[in-house]
Image (tube, rainbow, N blue to C red; front, side, top):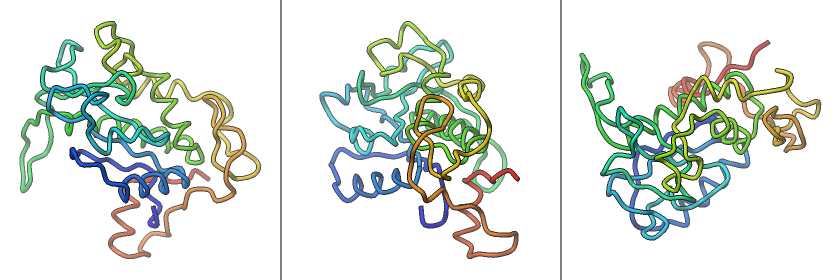
Length: 220
């Protein structure tokens, strides 16, 4: 958060609850930071057997389950009608290999970055949008799948195009400069500390540069 990142990907989790971790995610949310986390790969209902951080149920969280190539929830994906937000493809996802080349990965840790990318696109279009507003746009734009009803709260699979299409209203920040929280247009009351903007090229530490790669640039 201190380096201006507005979307955080958490492709990991644990069975033990951490109040320090919960507090950190909550504090990030006050600055409009969206935290996207994986539902886990135990094939269990996290409403009954919690998995953290996905079971915190915070307003700035998006929790992701995995589907196969036929939009079916995979046998190993965790699920939850309340705490899991939506699903994304998670079987044999093509990605880069450390060092060089390409490989495929499987799991909710592979599904989660797809939703993180959609959140990043939304923040590029509406950098002032609140975390809850970003989450709502992703849910509103997701593609409904009957088989996911009762498995994830939205009953849907992520759609980057749908999420962008769900952004309505003027492409301008609210007059008070705060984070929008109303409807799909991002307008409304919010705090008076808008998300930090990236430093000029060539300035900042290495950590700041890495954070800049994951935050949208404010349009002129």
